[in-house]
Image (cartoon, rainbow, N blue to C red; front, top):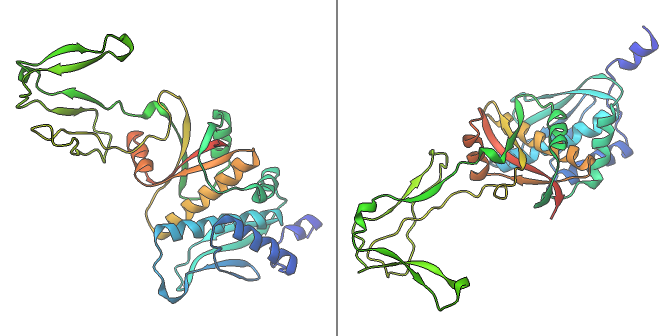
Length: 306
Protein backbone atom coordinates (compact mmCIF):
# COMPACT_ATOMS: atom_id res chain seq x y z
CA UNK A 1 0.00 0.00 0.00
CA UNK A 2 1.41 3.34 -1.04
CA UNK A 3 1.49 6.35 1.25
CA UNK A 4 -1.32 7.93 -0.81
CA UNK A 5 -3.44 4.78 -0.54
CA UNK A 6 -2.91 4.71 3.21
CA UNK A 7 -3.96 8.33 3.51
CA UNK A 8 -7.10 7.71 1.43
CA UNK A 9 -8.20 4.79 3.60
CA UNK A 10 -11.30 5.38 5.69
CA UNK A 11 -10.21 6.53 9.11
CA UNK A 12 -12.19 7.04 12.28
CA UNK A 13 -13.43 10.51 13.09
CA UNK A 14 -10.87 11.64 15.64
CA UNK A 15 -13.12 13.75 17.80
CA UNK A 16 -11.43 15.97 20.34
CA UNK A 17 -12.41 19.14 22.14
CA UNK A 18 -11.35 21.31 19.19
CA UNK A 19 -13.14 19.36 16.45
CA UNK A 20 -16.29 19.06 18.57
CA UNK A 21 -16.25 22.82 19.20
CA UNK A 22 -15.86 23.56 15.48
CA UNK A 23 -18.76 21.25 14.58
CA UNK A 24 -21.09 22.57 17.27
CA UNK A 25 -20.28 26.16 16.26
CA UNK A 26 -21.28 25.36 12.67
CA UNK A 27 -24.49 23.67 13.86
CA UNK A 28 -25.36 26.63 16.07
CA UNK A 29 -24.95 29.04 13.16
CA UNK A 30 -26.99 26.86 10.79
CA UNK A 31 -30.36 27.20 12.56
CA UNK A 32 -31.82 29.21 15.45
CA UNK A 33 -32.09 25.97 17.47
CA UNK A 34 -29.13 23.61 16.94
CA UNK A 35 -30.04 20.04 16.02
CA UNK A 36 -29.03 17.24 18.40
CA UNK A 37 -26.37 14.90 16.99
CA UNK A 38 -24.44 11.81 18.12
CA UNK A 39 -20.75 11.69 17.16
CA UNK A 40 -19.52 8.22 16.23
CA UNK A 41 -16.23 6.83 14.91
CA UNK A 42 -17.48 6.73 11.32
CA UNK A 43 -20.66 8.78 11.34
CA UNK A 44 -22.64 11.72 12.66
CA UNK A 45 -26.18 10.71 13.58
CA UNK A 46 -29.00 13.28 13.49
CA UNK A 47 -31.51 12.17 16.08
CA UNK A 48 -35.25 12.60 16.01
CA UNK A 49 -36.63 14.93 18.70
CA UNK A 50 -37.25 13.14 22.01
CA UNK A 51 -40.67 12.25 23.30
CA UNK A 52 -42.18 11.50 19.90
CA UNK A 53 -42.49 15.15 18.93
CA UNK A 54 -44.08 15.69 15.54
CA UNK A 55 -41.69 16.49 12.70
CA UNK A 56 -43.27 19.16 10.52
CA UNK A 57 -41.64 20.53 7.39
CA UNK A 58 -39.92 23.34 9.32
CA UNK A 59 -38.22 20.83 11.62
CA UNK A 60 -37.11 18.67 8.70
CA UNK A 61 -35.67 21.71 6.91
CA UNK A 62 -33.80 22.58 10.11
CA UNK A 63 -32.35 19.08 10.27
CA UNK A 64 -31.26 19.46 6.66
CA UNK A 65 -29.47 22.73 7.43
CA UNK A 66 -27.61 20.98 10.25
CA UNK A 67 -26.73 18.13 7.88
CA UNK A 68 -25.19 20.58 5.39
CA UNK A 69 -23.30 22.37 8.17
CA UNK A 70 -21.76 19.12 9.42
CA UNK A 71 -20.89 18.11 5.85
CA UNK A 72 -19.06 21.42 5.39
CA UNK A 73 -16.96 20.92 8.52
CA UNK A 74 -16.07 17.29 7.80
CA UNK A 75 -15.09 18.01 4.22
CA UNK A 76 -12.39 20.48 5.25
CA UNK A 77 -11.12 17.76 7.61
CA UNK A 78 -10.57 15.61 4.51
CA UNK A 79 -13.46 13.17 4.82
CA UNK A 80 -15.55 11.86 1.92
CA UNK A 81 -19.16 11.51 2.99
CA UNK A 82 -22.56 10.12 2.09
CA UNK A 83 -25.91 11.06 3.58
CA UNK A 84 -28.09 8.13 4.58
CA UNK A 85 -31.68 7.89 5.79
CA UNK A 86 -31.86 4.47 7.44
CA UNK A 87 -35.36 4.63 8.88
CA UNK A 88 -34.04 3.35 12.20
CA UNK A 89 -36.19 4.52 15.12
CA UNK A 90 -34.64 7.62 16.65
CA UNK A 91 -32.40 8.32 13.65
CA UNK A 92 -33.54 10.88 11.10
CA UNK A 93 -30.34 11.06 9.04
CA UNK A 94 -26.75 9.79 9.16
CA UNK A 95 -23.66 11.43 7.70
CA UNK A 96 -21.23 8.56 7.10
CA UNK A 97 -17.51 8.66 6.31
CA UNK A 98 -16.64 6.53 3.24
CA UNK A 99 -13.13 7.73 2.36
CA UNK A 100 -10.65 10.56 2.40
CA UNK A 101 -9.68 13.22 -0.12
CA UNK A 102 -8.18 16.68 -0.01
CA UNK A 103 -10.81 19.42 0.34
CA UNK A 104 -11.36 21.51 -2.76
CA UNK A 105 -11.09 25.29 -2.82
CA UNK A 106 -14.87 25.61 -2.74
CA UNK A 107 -15.00 23.39 0.36
CA UNK A 108 -12.71 25.86 2.12
CA UNK A 109 -14.68 28.84 0.82
CA UNK A 110 -17.96 27.43 2.17
CA UNK A 111 -16.32 26.64 5.50
CA UNK A 112 -14.90 30.17 5.77
CA UNK A 113 -18.37 31.55 5.00
CA UNK A 114 -19.91 29.88 8.09
CA UNK A 115 -18.99 32.86 10.25
CA UNK A 116 -20.13 35.32 7.58
CA UNK A 117 -23.55 33.71 7.29
CA UNK A 118 -26.32 36.08 8.26
CA UNK A 119 -29.99 35.36 8.86
CA UNK A 120 -32.08 35.31 5.67
CA UNK A 121 -33.43 38.76 4.86
CA UNK A 122 -34.72 40.92 2.05
CA UNK A 123 -32.41 41.27 -0.93
CA UNK A 124 -32.14 44.83 -2.19
CA UNK A 125 -29.70 44.50 -5.11
CA UNK A 126 -29.85 41.13 -6.90
CA UNK A 127 -26.75 39.10 -7.71
CA UNK A 128 -25.77 38.85 -11.40
CA UNK A 129 -26.84 35.80 -13.42
CA UNK A 130 -23.31 34.36 -13.41
CA UNK A 131 -23.34 34.29 -9.60
CA UNK A 132 -26.67 32.43 -9.59
CA UNK A 133 -25.30 29.85 -12.01
CA UNK A 134 -22.22 29.32 -9.83
CA UNK A 135 -24.44 28.72 -6.77
CA UNK A 136 -26.56 26.22 -8.71
CA UNK A 137 -23.46 24.42 -10.01
CA UNK A 138 -22.10 24.13 -6.45
CA UNK A 139 -25.10 22.10 -5.27
CA UNK A 140 -24.79 18.31 -5.32
CA UNK A 141 -27.37 16.97 -2.84
CA UNK A 142 -29.13 13.87 -4.21
CA UNK A 143 -32.80 13.95 -5.22
CA UNK A 144 -32.75 17.75 -5.31
CA UNK A 145 -32.66 20.31 -8.09
CA UNK A 146 -31.83 24.00 -8.02
CA UNK A 147 -33.53 25.62 -11.00
CA UNK A 148 -33.05 29.20 -12.15
CA UNK A 149 -36.35 30.95 -12.88
CA UNK A 150 -36.72 34.34 -14.51
CA UNK A 151 -39.14 37.20 -14.12
CA UNK A 152 -40.35 36.53 -17.66
CA UNK A 153 -42.23 33.46 -16.35
CA UNK A 154 -44.69 35.68 -14.49
CA UNK A 155 -48.20 35.39 -15.95
CA UNK A 156 -49.84 38.55 -17.20
CA UNK A 157 -53.05 38.65 -15.15
CA UNK A 158 -55.34 41.61 -15.80
CA UNK A 159 -58.89 42.81 -15.30
CA UNK A 160 -61.48 43.19 -18.04
CA UNK A 161 -65.14 44.18 -18.27
CA UNK A 162 -67.03 41.00 -19.01
CA UNK A 163 -70.21 42.48 -20.49
CA UNK A 164 -69.81 45.82 -22.27
CA UNK A 165 -73.39 45.73 -23.55
CA UNK A 166 -74.56 46.10 -19.97
CA UNK A 167 -73.49 49.75 -19.79
CA UNK A 168 -76.38 51.42 -21.70
CA UNK A 169 -76.41 54.63 -19.72
CA UNK A 170 -72.85 54.81 -18.46
CA UNK A 171 -70.27 57.05 -20.09
CA UNK A 172 -66.84 58.42 -19.34
CA UNK A 173 -66.51 62.02 -18.29
CA UNK A 174 -63.66 64.30 -17.21
CA UNK A 175 -63.92 65.18 -13.53
CA UNK A 176 -61.47 67.76 -12.22
CA UNK A 177 -61.14 71.07 -10.44
CA UNK A 178 -59.70 73.00 -13.39
CA UNK A 179 -56.30 71.54 -12.64
CA UNK A 180 -55.11 69.03 -15.25
CA UNK A 181 -52.78 67.08 -12.88
CA UNK A 182 -55.85 66.03 -10.89
CA UNK A 183 -57.88 65.02 -13.92
CA UNK A 184 -59.37 61.56 -13.77
CA UNK A 185 -62.02 59.50 -15.50
CA UNK A 186 -65.23 58.61 -13.73
CA UNK A 187 -68.37 56.67 -14.67
CA UNK A 188 -71.34 59.00 -14.93
CA UNK A 189 -74.75 57.42 -15.18
CA UNK A 190 -77.81 56.49 -13.20
CA UNK A 191 -75.91 54.11 -10.95
CA UNK A 192 -77.56 51.02 -12.42
CA UNK A 193 -74.98 48.47 -13.51
CA UNK A 194 -77.15 45.33 -13.37
CA UNK A 195 -74.92 42.67 -14.87
CA UNK A 196 -71.55 44.34 -15.28
CA UNK A 197 -68.76 42.49 -13.53
CA UNK A 198 -65.02 42.19 -13.53
CA UNK A 199 -63.45 39.04 -14.92
CA UNK A 200 -59.99 37.54 -14.48
CA UNK A 201 -58.26 37.16 -17.83
CA UNK A 202 -55.10 35.02 -17.67
CA UNK A 203 -53.78 31.56 -18.34
CA UNK A 204 -54.94 30.17 -15.03
CA UNK A 205 -51.44 30.23 -13.59
CA UNK A 206 -52.40 31.85 -10.29
CA UNK A 207 -53.59 28.89 -8.20
CA UNK A 208 -54.70 30.94 -5.22
CA UNK A 209 -56.46 33.73 -7.09
CA UNK A 210 -59.87 34.19 -5.56
CA UNK A 211 -62.67 36.77 -5.45
CA UNK A 212 -62.95 39.14 -2.52
CA UNK A 213 -65.63 41.64 -1.55
CA UNK A 214 -64.55 45.27 -1.60
CA UNK A 215 -66.38 48.53 -1.01
CA UNK A 216 -68.23 50.25 1.78
CA UNK A 217 -71.72 49.20 0.88
CA UNK A 218 -72.22 51.97 -1.67
CA UNK A 219 -72.45 49.54 -4.56
CA UNK A 220 -75.57 47.59 -5.23
CA UNK A 221 -73.60 44.44 -6.06
CA UNK A 222 -70.41 42.88 -4.76
CA UNK A 223 -67.38 43.88 -6.81
CA UNK A 224 -64.77 41.17 -7.48
CA UNK A 225 -61.13 41.85 -6.68
CA UNK A 226 -57.87 39.97 -7.14
CA UNK A 227 -56.07 38.29 -4.27
CA UNK A 228 -52.93 36.60 -5.55
CA UNK A 229 -49.47 35.65 -4.29
CA UNK A 230 -46.93 38.43 -4.61
CA UNK A 231 -44.35 37.73 -7.28
CA UNK A 232 -40.90 37.98 -5.72
CA UNK A 233 -39.54 40.34 -8.38
CA UNK A 234 -40.15 43.97 -9.09
CA UNK A 235 -42.26 44.49 -12.24
CA UNK A 236 -40.18 44.33 -15.41
CA UNK A 237 -37.00 43.87 -13.40
CA UNK A 238 -35.73 40.96 -15.47
CA UNK A 239 -34.38 39.43 -12.26
CA UNK A 240 -33.79 35.72 -11.75
CA UNK A 241 -34.01 33.53 -8.66
CA UNK A 242 -33.35 29.91 -7.73
CA UNK A 243 -36.13 27.43 -7.00
CA UNK A 244 -35.31 24.44 -4.76
CA UNK A 245 -37.17 21.26 -5.75
CA UNK A 246 -37.06 17.58 -4.83
CA UNK A 247 -38.22 14.55 -6.79
CA UNK A 248 -40.38 13.26 -3.93
CA UNK A 249 -42.26 14.20 -0.78
CA UNK A 250 -40.92 11.73 1.81
CA UNK A 251 -39.31 12.93 5.03
CA UNK A 252 -35.83 12.61 3.57
CA UNK A 253 -36.76 14.93 0.71
CA UNK A 254 -37.59 17.72 3.15
CA UNK A 255 -34.28 17.13 4.94
CA UNK A 256 -32.41 17.16 1.63
CA UNK A 257 -34.18 20.37 0.59
CA UNK A 258 -33.09 21.99 3.85
CA UNK A 259 -29.51 20.86 3.16
CA UNK A 260 -29.62 22.26 -0.37
CA UNK A 261 -30.91 25.62 0.88
CA UNK A 262 -28.21 25.88 3.56
CA UNK A 263 -25.41 24.95 1.18
CA UNK A 264 -26.71 27.52 -1.31
CA UNK A 265 -26.64 30.15 1.46
CA UNK A 266 -23.04 29.22 2.26
CA UNK A 267 -22.08 29.36 -1.42
CA UNK A 268 -23.69 32.79 -1.72
CA UNK A 269 -21.99 34.07 1.44
CA UNK A 270 -18.64 32.83 0.10
CA UNK A 271 -19.18 35.17 -2.87
CA UNK A 272 -20.28 38.07 -0.68
CA UNK A 273 -24.05 37.76 -1.21
CA UNK A 274 -26.93 37.44 1.22
CA UNK A 275 -29.92 35.16 0.73
CA UNK A 276 -33.65 35.80 0.83
CA UNK A 277 -35.66 32.61 1.40
CA UNK A 278 -39.26 32.64 0.12
CA UNK A 279 -41.51 29.69 0.99
CA UNK A 280 -45.20 28.82 0.90
CA UNK A 281 -47.67 29.84 -1.82
CA UNK A 282 -45.26 32.21 -3.57
CA UNK A 283 -42.70 29.47 -4.18
CA UNK A 284 -45.41 27.05 -5.33
CA UNK A 285 -46.88 29.67 -7.67
CA UNK A 286 -43.50 30.21 -9.32
CA UNK A 287 -43.01 26.45 -9.78
CA UNK A 288 -46.45 26.06 -11.37
CA UNK A 289 -45.96 29.08 -13.61
CA UNK A 290 -42.57 27.86 -14.78
CA UNK A 291 -44.01 24.33 -15.28
CA UNK A 292 -41.14 22.76 -13.36
CA UNK A 293 -41.49 19.12 -12.25
CA UNK A 294 -40.92 18.14 -8.65
CA UNK A 295 -41.97 19.39 -5.23
CA UNK A 296 -41.08 23.07 -4.66
CA UNK A 297 -39.70 23.92 -1.22
CA UNK A 298 -38.22 27.41 -1.41
CA UNK A 299 -37.44 30.26 -3.76
CA UNK A 300 -34.03 31.82 -3.14
CA UNK A 301 -32.96 35.34 -4.08
CA UNK A 302 -29.29 36.23 -3.79
CA UNK A 303 -27.74 39.67 -3.62
CA UNK A 304 -26.96 42.59 -1.37
CA UNK A 305 -29.24 42.61 1.71
CA UNK A 306 -31.60 45.55 2.10
